[in-house]
Length: 362
Ligand SMILES: *Cc1c(COP(=O)(O)O)cnc(C)c1O
Image 1: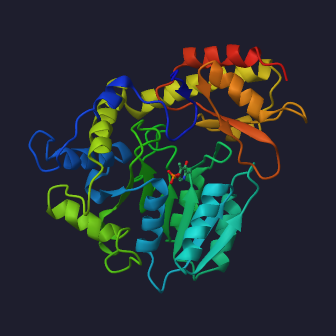
Image 2: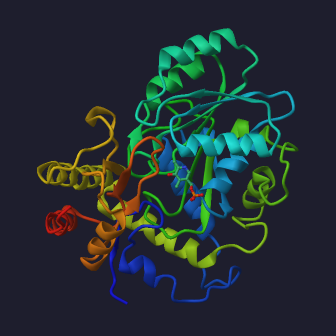
């Protein structure tokens, strides 16, 4: 099989050294595996998320990112809670599904997939609806690539004293922000996005004081993050149930490589450089970006089909032959495709991608 670069945010292209860490069948409690590895990862994750490290803690949870979002929402809410969800894409909609499945009390403020939630509308809404206790939002909406105004939204939510849950799945580790400065209560992400590990677990970084309040709230045994957190805290990083050992080893390597690269700021600069090459190249070739430039993240970008009879399948296959795998679009009102710019991908790779796209005649 010819290897290709994944321009799909999750799973994404990982380094050779990260892949090599998975060539051993590790035993969780043997010294060779390094029993302290989980505690080391947890400590480093909190330090990546905030400089207020004493106020925050983290819990890792088997499964994909959605499991962590579901766990954070369901375990932080009790029968007396009511959740407001800000929606401008499918990941916001997924939070609605989570709340609906769990039978939680919730409401939704919905926006077009090409626009960001309005801080002033949110302010007005919270003014009128005092029964809301929790607000959940997505930072980078991977559906379109739009970057929601995290700081403005957090300020309003905190002004009203609500518990704040942020799905930062596709931004944590790739876009700088401090969850302590933003006063975020629960933030979720996963191993296989901007930290550039392989899929297998998600993570929740939360205020220690809020994590304490999750006791007894879980509607599910395996998603009980309070219980998982207590086990990790009290038993030196032990997971309840089989832990994804290969993924954990690879993730530690990914954290080391993030540090070597220069941390989140350096990674952000690389993603921005990738994104710039992509945008300029696509524009020159006549492709139109879906999202306004000032709202666009450097993580993933949506492009409109250039003509009515454009075949995504042909396009996809040609790019794949050239060594690149891209993503279909997910926008409800327009035909689009998406190109991710995260993972072990560099501006020169994106230049080669643009050359490959230039050879495609639509
Ligand atoms: C990737 C992602 C998720 C999690 O998706 P999974 O398929 O469960 O890994 C959640 N929210 C956002 C914004 C994402 O980009």
